[in-house]
Image (cartoon, rainbow, N blue to C red; front, side, top):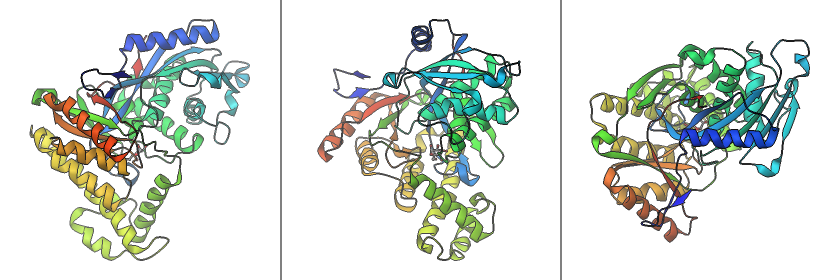
Length: 420
Ligand code: GLA
């Protein structure tokens, strides 16, 4: 964190990769009195558009942040060797110094066995093994500059950093190409869904493992196919301001799961595998066929309308990028926010204030990003207006009696990899 004297607002700076790696390595040496085999890292993400579409077979468009989670790791027993069944996982986090060392037999890292943050790390080892990619025991220390609880995928950054670390330490070779990385994504999703117990959709892990620097990742969650869409804001004199509202969101709580359940129930009513099958020109027909069930029909209709229109907005947004018209995406972002606020009902007062204040201060467009109920918003702003928009948002938060927000500037950065 740094407080820029000129503006008085708080900026969350990304660590230089070499510095992040050295922090994790130093913490590893202090904890285990040994050298790690290496340091691996993975980024958090912001989603440009396509929210709550990834568990509906839809499209989304995240970019990787320069903010990364670093994992220093040492293999302590080879996979599949005699005694491997006794392999042990030991974990520590520089973010949780009071939590001390977490330790468990590798065999006890599956669903129902791990609580708290270690689930996102140890769970990946379990999920890799469950998919036939056997790993052995290991020691690891984690450090991170991805803001926690800010809707910027600190969980996925941890999972994916552990995934690429285990991949190399145990010679799995999956991180070497996109097909293998897609399998790492699957393991990270299982860790999050089944071990950590958060029923998330997979966008975050795909972004962290499969995106490219300088590009947005157009992810089609129907078949996990991707297209790397050039995303060069600076060339257009623009910047993407991320506003961490500090209103902490929790994906493991009931609201996210309730939205997912509502979509699945709607798909069943409509006789489709996923809401992706409802196209915009068939939306009115589909809405007319929705009846009262666990939820009143009008609520389910609004949930469906968000998902179908949001998928269409991703297509519009990408078409504008492809046409070199990044300056014209603002209204699409605004429409996404309205839909998330009014139809999907996952915004929060802090997010609405952030978005409204950013627009009033000149942002071309703004929207909440990620799961919602708190977390972060993004605003597309002129490069020269970044500070002014941040100050205006901070002032609006003060006026509303909210905690001061924090800010970062997102540049499409690179995916999970070995750092040192
Ligand atoms: C969270 C989840 C993702 C996705 C978004 C909403 O970030 O982890 O899978 O569903 O919310 O788009």
